[in-house]
Amino acid sequence: MQKTIEINKQTIEPGQNKMVILNTYELHTKTKLEIPVQVFHAEQEGPAMMLSAGMHGEEINGIEIIRKVVTRSEVQKLKCGTLIAIPVINVISFLYASRDLPDGRDLNRCFPGSRRGSIGSRIAFDIMKHILPVIDFGVDFHTGGAKINNFPQLRCVFGFPDNIAIAQRFSAPLIIDSPYRDGTFRKEAAKKNKPILVFEGGESMRFDYHAINEGVNGCLRLLNSYGMIDFGVPDNRSVKIEKSTWVRSNSSGLFHMSVSNGSPVAKGDLLGIVFNPYGTTEEKIISQVNGYIVGINNQPVVNQGDALIHIGLEQE
Image 1 (cartoon, rainbow, N blue to C red):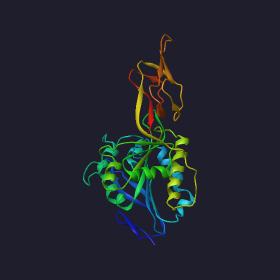
Image 2 (image 1 turned 45 degrees about the vertical axis):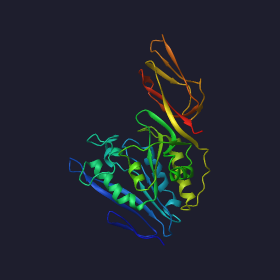
Image 3 (image 1 turned 135 degrees about the vertical axis):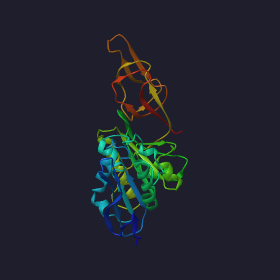
Image 4 (image 1 turned 90 degrees about the horizontal axis):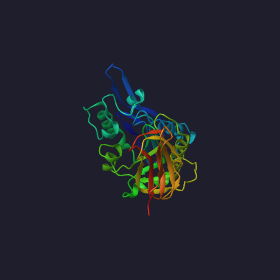
């Protein structure tokens, strides 16, 4: 039998599914906003997994992934362990459909946070205080930025065996070695020995159903691999990417892609062409490396120096 868990003075008993509130925050209009947390707490002991999304308010694919996961009957009747789901961490930026908070801060640079700091710092503090102690590991869902479409990928630190083990259970098409960044949730969680992996898929403010399906399937694989549900999903052939490079345009104009996101490319392959709007010049974009397309810029009008295609190099 599992123990009763507590999140900000709200208790969840073994065998109970419950929605609790991480905390309440006040806007300048005196409007109060809450961050709901869904807790599925089985009777039998098992791992405690977290799924979180909406760290940036315009990243909606992860929100949809978690919605699809928590509505499944298998998840609502966990065989063992605990699932903590936070579909929208940053409710304030989600309200504004913005990446940043109203004060211009990025919530994912506010960790570990402060009880009396900015709104972002307070949210980060509450996550570190009330959520992190309850979980064993988690997956934080993100998308590419404006007009940047990331192929479904899981980012972790290859130097930590726990990261790789969780990533392989999730089995995303691409697993990318990604170092920690200061002020991020996953770096501060790592200091507490709580692995948080980052899933990237699609672009902001646009549903990408391939990325959504890969995210849902990855979550189900994780839950199934730990015996929390009984629902098998075939694994992907995951490609491990140890480093990456952006291909940039040398000229301005109209960019036409010649390759698909996620596809393998070889040195010398034509990636696309930048045409002068007046039909007088064109620049062929040629791959300088062997690798896989991990992200693309969907902006058709580009300027000199713009990042066009993100290529990942497979681990040798």
